Amino acid sequence: MYIHPQTIVGELVANDYRTASVFKRYDIDYCCNGNRSLEQACEKGGIDVDVLIRSLQNIPADMLSSVADFNSWPADLLADYIEKKHHRYVRAKLKEIAPLLNHVAKVHGDLHPELWEVEGLLSEAAFDLVDHLEKEERVLFPFVRRMVEAGTEEVHAPFGRVENPVSIMMHEHDHEGERFRRISVLTNNYTPPGDACNSYRVILRMLKEFEEDLHHHIHLENNILFPKAIAMQEQAKK
Image (tube, rainbow, N blue to C red; front, side, top):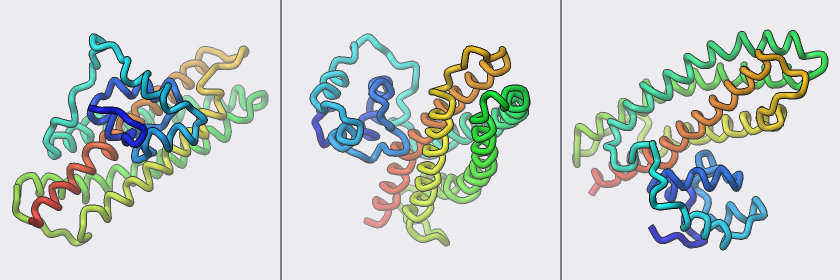
């Protein structure tokens, strides 16, 4: 793929997931804000776009990604994968993280009051994410599967164009991205303070892993699944 200043961040990562490591290095959001061009992302981050492009072009050829080529998967298989891997992960990990975070906040909250804000943000995320997953599983993903089964025949839905639920899901993704960016700032990018006990270190590691999984989860939907769904509906109209 030819890379230039107007190349869209999310499309680049969808075509070659190895580029995600470069965007992480430059602190460029490729999931929630993946619809920006390289030039726009660089302007916001104060990054030289030519330097970024060289970094993207110079990824070693033998740096094989352990991540599958999701862009080549049919939309229904991708929806199944997201639901069974990422949705299950969110539900399971939230149940693990919440009680441990509460314990750490009670023990260290006097000296590190930011822990209470982190706990509040996580509690909000837990409520919103579960609701978000259910909407995808009950409305959007079943419709994607129906479109794949129908092939070139148009599939009608009560919500009209598939862009309607997609836009809602993407807005909610943006909100979660902002929430976890705030958690990252509050925890100094998940860096344990000098007086952190083992539980404190563990909860920060769990929060960081949760955010990283969420980024990949959102990337798969925003940059690959949702565009596939929109394209299928457009194709069926012709």
